[in-house]
Image 1: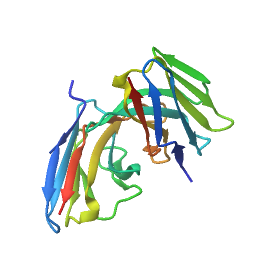
Image 2: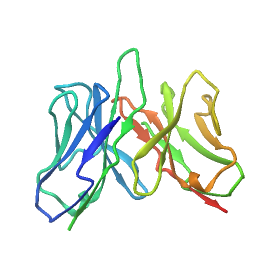
Image 3: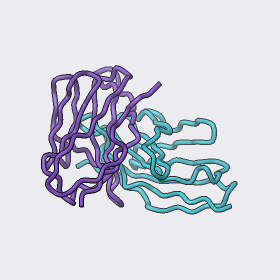
Image 4: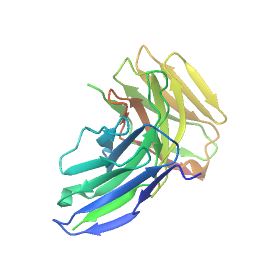
Length: 115
Length: 110
């Protein structure tokens, strides 16, 4: 039972390079989220997708784009990486509806360093 | 606005009880959560409590909720060295996301 799978686990980029972080879930959840975790800051929401075909900005969306490819997959793209985007990125999914408010399940994270 | 606060550090001796405290601001939160993060790992859901409950017990874990004071606590009985980790309190945000505290680092000394 894989749950939420993120790739890659580690990545080093140079300033200005682009890359896409991949996330897939096998729990048939309708909602998916991208967070970043910085020391002493907890987790902050970058973007989320409440359902297939929709995406919305979170607390810290600048410098990122997302794509909800299908119900399973939600990717995060850095078009021109900056050192301030050095962080650990977590993808999460949950089932959210008017009748259900299930917990979020997290992937193991992508540790991204930008030089 | 939505905000969750918790103390940053807690140190206990093996076998003692640990109590991690959290305050939140959104009185309409229906669920409140505790997650555990071990070094280099992702977030593992420990337990959650529905807002109409005062207490929830799950083996060594006890969650207490004081809705009037917007205070949540996590008690770990008979704390073991394997419990050393960062513990995050979280409430459900308006966008369906989770609003996290900064995390409490629990250190367990043998």
